Image (cartoon, rainbow, N blue to C red; front, side, top):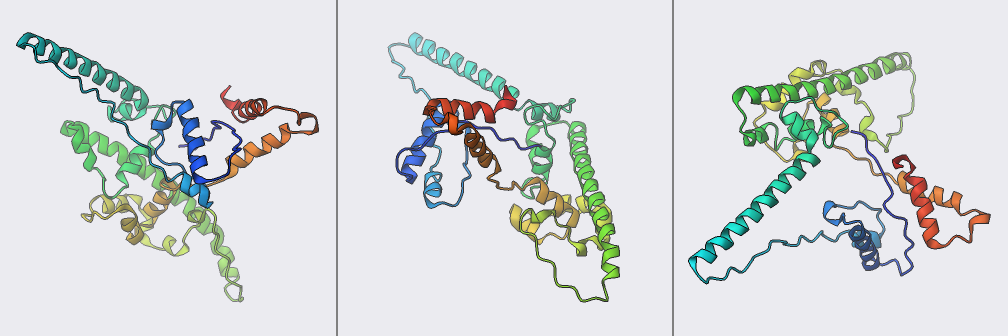
Length: 300
C-alpha cells in the first residue's frame, strides 16, 4: 500500500491561533467538502493550540426518522408500517450497494476472485494486518459463515501472502547480515566507538542478534507458532513480548505510519515560488487556487 497525500485547501487563518479558531476553521472546510463524517482522527504537530483543536470528537448525529404513526384504524396502521418497511429496505439496499463499491477490493478477495491491488481496499495488506493482530487472527472468518472448503482456501491464501512477505524480510535481513559480517571480522581486534542509534525509521534497522537465531531461517515455523499460540493479549503487549523476529519486523513495517511534515512543507515551497516579486499583488483567493492546482496537479 502506497501512502498518498493531497491538498484539500490552503486557507489563511486571520483570527488568533487558538484551539477554538483552528477547530472551527477545520470543521468549516470539512463541511464545505461534505467529508467530515469520513474523518476519524487528525494527526498534527505538538503545538498546544493544534493539540487542543484536534482533540474534538466527530459528533455522530442520529439521522433516524422516527415517524409518528397515527393510530386511526387498523388499515392506516398497516399502510404506514408497510411504507416504512419499504423505505428501510431501500435504504439497506442503497447502503449495501455503497459498501460493495467502496470496499470492492475486500469483497473480491473474500469471494476469492481476482483482485486488483489498485482497487479500493484491494491491497492484501488489509488482510495480513487483520490476521497479524493477536486479538483477531482468523477468528473474524467465522462471521463470514463460509463453507469449510471455502474457509480453508481463504485461510491458506492469506497465510501464503504473509509467508511471501516474511520471505522478503528474510532476504533483506540476510543480505544486510552478509554485508556487515566481513566488516565486523576485520575490525574485531580494533577498539571502535559504539555507533549512534538511528532515531528516524529505526524499525528498519536489522537486529544482528536476531539474525543468528535458527527460527529466523524458517518463516513458516514462526507463522505457525503465532497462529497456534493460545495467548490473546492486546496488540502492543503481545508483539512487545514476542520472540518471533521475522514476524516482528514485518509487523513494524505493516503497522507503522511515520509522521512527516514533508507534504505540508512542499505546499509552502510551492506557495513561496508563486509569491515572487511580480506576484505580490495576487489576491487571497487567487493564491489559494494556484497553490491548490500546483500541489494537486497529478490529479488533473
